[in-house]
Amino acid sequence: MEERRTNLTSLIGMVVMFVILMYFMYNNQSTSTPTTSTETKTFVENKDSSAEQPLTSLPTDSLGLNKYKEQLGAFGYAATLPSAKEGAYTEMENELIKVQVSNKGGYISYLLIKNQKTYNGKPVELIKDNNASFSLKIATNDHRTLETKDLYFEPTLSGNTLSMKLKVSATEYLEYLYTLRPDEYFLDFQIRSVGLSKTLNTGDAPILSWKLKARRMEKSVTYEDRYTLAVAQYENNDDKSIGGSGVETKTLNKVQWVDFKQHLFSSFLISDKPFSEGNFRVENLATSEGENVQNTKDFSVSFPITYISGEINESLHFYYGPSDYHLLKKYDKEYGLTKAIPLGWGIFGWINKWFVIPVFDLLSNFMTVGLAIIVLTIIVRILLSPIQYKSYLSQAKMKVLRPEIEEINNKYKGQENAMKRQQETMALYSKAGVNPLSGCIPALLQMPVFFALFSFFPTAFVLRQKSFLWATDLSSYDSIAHLPFSIPFYGNHVSLFPILASITMLIYMLMTTGQMQQPQQEGMPNMKFMMYISPIMMLFFFNNYASGLSLYYFISNLITIFIMLAIKYWIIDEKRIHAKIQENKQKPRKESKFQRKMREMMEQAEAQRNAAQNKKK
Image: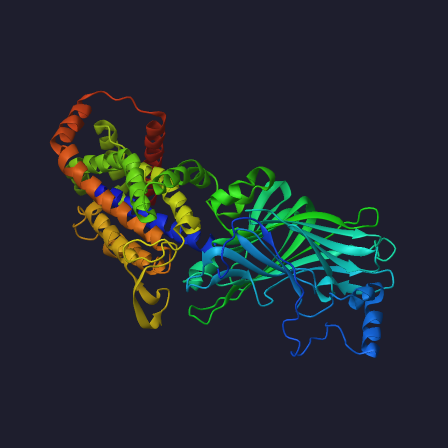
């Protein structure tokens, strides 16, 4: 019976681990031909002169132009320049990305990640069809408030540097300076004003705003949405993730960078000098699965800008590219960009950084990604096998003691003898040299590795669109059948790896609870229900998760089963354990401080209970 309690404790521990896992799960949600060298292009093109122009476009009649210039005040000069054309842009590209910067607003209006495809084979275009904007809201001395996204800039391209000038005159202007680094996903970006100290109201700080509506890139909307977040590094180098369900707003102080993270792709805005504060807003747009879902999150952030001697001078950087740990690590010394990848906090992150990632990188250099997952799983299970041995040894000792524990339970039946029964049981454990909690400690020691790997697989860019067996993309679910309807919490498809992982988990739990065939005790939870709930939860929640993660749990459970069988039939000798326990009983054992304290507490409780009963009599 006491063994049954130990098995119950182990089972409850596994259920608790799975519940924590679910908590982590929900708190944690190219068409161009590559060039061999940096290439830049510039042109001004009216894409559709016949289309209806928006209100912010340049009027064509002289009366309208004069009125427009009057509305813009000093910046009306920019509206008279040849570059003031709707749909005109300047293009730059290198080996990795193609960028188009719009004359209107001076911001990036199109950005293509080369050599990458979406789940349905289309180019990865992080910015397209007006899903992003970058703007300064500035106050002028003539009491006007203007936004640069509505004004026309004049482009000048020199090599891989693009100057976009919003002019007040030939020598007075606000300038956006873009520099595209060769063979990098980085654009250096400078905002500066020249000769505008008399034009701008320097007592009213400009507001920089950056917006991005994240475009869908991956097969599973719910899975991609779970890991699509705004991540910011702010005061004291802390990092904060923003964006769950609905709408979330947050204000952070001393923000150095923000990443509008789209699961496996990132859009960073980095400042050399931290902004005094950042006001964030994230709205969830993905409410269902299906091909009609085009966007997952709507991001926006605004920062106040500080004038320096009446002028603007901000040194910033953009990173548009994969959320790849190795790519971002190159910039860790300056900016700490790998903090945007949720590898887990504390010890979980350390295990990933110093063990899982290096080992997986080494393996993937010599084999396919799918095989690397299997070999990594084997290595992890072998390293943890001594802990599993300790756990099984504890269960074997409890099994040997079961007849004596049942004898104590039969001798001290009833609620009135509960304290005495517990005292005798503890005395037996002490005499036999058995710790009933030793079976729980190994499970706790495995938890850091368990949760570290749970954080690693959803964030590993190397898994993206890598196939293995029937899985076409290890970073998404492995669908073997599509359903004509959707099951709540499950979806409209059937993934095979979660099924295999659930079956092996059930087999493992049946093996660990194989001794629990006695009649159900009064007050005890339904053991069969608890035994089946974890595999069922895994089956449902992992159906939309990355198949690489489900593959890991399937192989891990399978190896665990084989290790348990090997321990049971070739390593553990129950007769020898029984002889050792009997030998321990003959030896005088000194009580530890903990055992003495527990005994004294139980004796005091027993004395108090007896005194209360005598008082009633």
